[in-house]
Image (cartoon, rainbow, N blue to C red; front, side, top):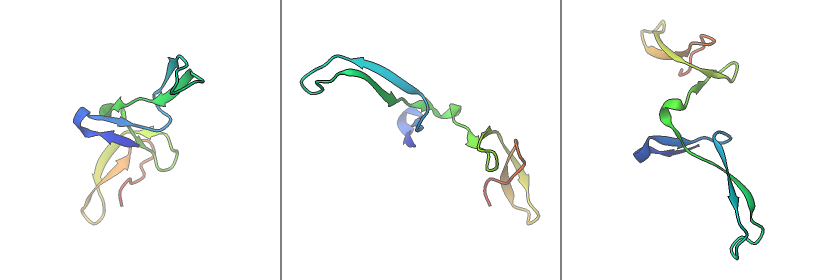
Length: 81
């Protein structure tokens, strides 16, 4: 994953694959269809649920020690700590 903070965008591997058709040239004599990853806006990136591996929303709750921790809305598992 690569972040572009000036533009509020990130590049996530395997997501938003764009195909570009290129003509053969001296630099690339083969030409053809080139596939690469394009950036997406940070608001479209979601946390991954620790148990199922699917996207999830994040909630906040206090644990037994009085600390504020994030948890997965999908499974209820704690995300940090």
